[in-house]
Amino acid sequence: MEAILIDDEPLALRRLASLLSHYPADVQVVAQAANGAEGLALVRAMRPDVIFLDIEMPLLNGFELLAQLEEMPSVIFTTAYDHYAVQAFEQRSIDYLLKPIEPARLAKTIARLRQAHQEKTAGFNINDLGQFLQNLKPTETLRSLSVKSGDKILLIALSDISYFESQERYVFVRTVQGVQHLTNYTIAALEEKLPDQFVRISRSCIVNTAHINNLQRYFGGKFLVTLTDRPASCLETGTAYGSNLKRLMEL
Image (cartoon, rainbow, N blue to C red; front, side):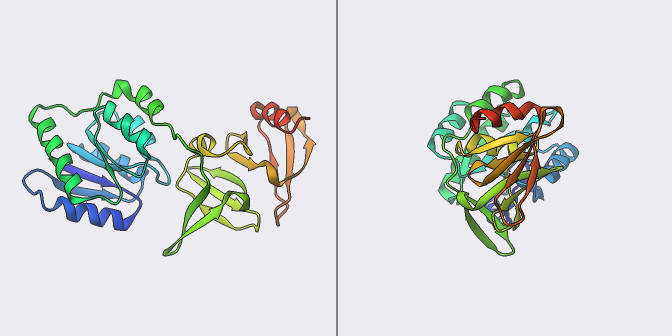
């Protein structure tokens, strides 16, 4: 089976490729991608038998990648989801590998792939994608946020975050000190996982209400939201989200 590995962590890619090299009769790694957008292009161009797919990635996460595929290969998620999500994977008959991937667990995955390939079934029905993704919504809220800074992984306390903002396909976190970091989350995923003190005020912005200084009425039923962070950030609400902010702030 021809395989494409898709993961934004170089070490995870190298480890998985190394582990799969022990199964030359079953799997041939034909390409690797460092993010979801690159992975989508490779899958469309090369049409592999199987993809090993990370979930939280910049540009395009694993779920978003699957939603854009016209033809579905066998899908093996490489993930750190908790046991509730793992149960959902099993119920949908899609295999998963919890990081760090263990050789013994990978052996079971290869056996499942071998059987699926012999039966000529991919183990995934794209028509079930909506229900599948619904089952895999995060079950716990975030308590901190991990971001990459060079060769380091930084943990940012939620209390130190003033807001999140999407710019094209990237989502950035802004700290109260005015520092910006790239995240691996989409705005939609953050809206699901963040606690109630974070509220989405527009299609592209989620704000930490603990750092709101004042609100000013703006055109078309919108508001300008000024924060207490070091840059004194001023954010514009979207028309569809103004009522949500008003209720939260008891205006």
